[in-house]
Image (tube, rainbow, N blue to C red; front, top):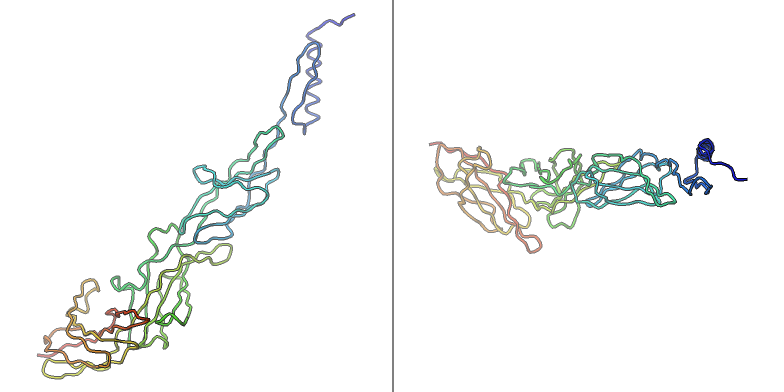
Length: 338
């Protein structure tokens, strides 16, 4: 005899099915066998997403990349690294670190997502973790030892040299400090490496006295307690002015200058400045003579009395077949009486 279908029978069967789902909480899908009252139906069971990505930190920076690491997330099979707009940069499988290419001097905000795929092919992903200030190292500094910006001063009395430079205007990062390397004028010998937390350096070295030098600068940032250096500037060649040893009268309004020979000089050009105390961008210079390299003295034509004048002896040197001319960084001040 066949059993009658009743609403009570259906309720009992559904109650038994729900109990089976609760008890088998780790089951992904449960299939109910067909009965006379139901067709085969599939019920999904809630599945946890991978844990939120934690402890994201930058561990390295170069001029063209940055490296980040993070703690493994429970249940994760892969990680996605996205930019701040949600665009995918990289998918990482089997590890918890990644190096991503980027331009020098850039600073980024990143999003990290942990994910896994179910047996049925469904992607389950955590909420995105946002991390700020991921950096590459700085770009080249600008205006290193620029005479026009008054970024080179060479006090010949004690061979005390001051050089300055500017942050690259395209940098999104700020250097925490700088490394400065000083070479001989021909570039063959490294003389000294300096460090500075400011965009300038003052030093005095007998090695460069009356010879000149080359220098280069790189900024750095600190990542994971390590200094990561940016792009090096181009080598800058700096030649000293001639050190004037005496300025004496050689007539009523004429001045005789004498100076020390500058290494590898091929000639000396003498300039007159009638406003030497003005800012450097407002000074005007007038060439008043040139002498050959074997000469270390010069007599001016009559000068204007009563004015404060600056006299410069500027050498041109030849190094490895290339000529360099010193900047007008040092002068002798004279004021002739009427």
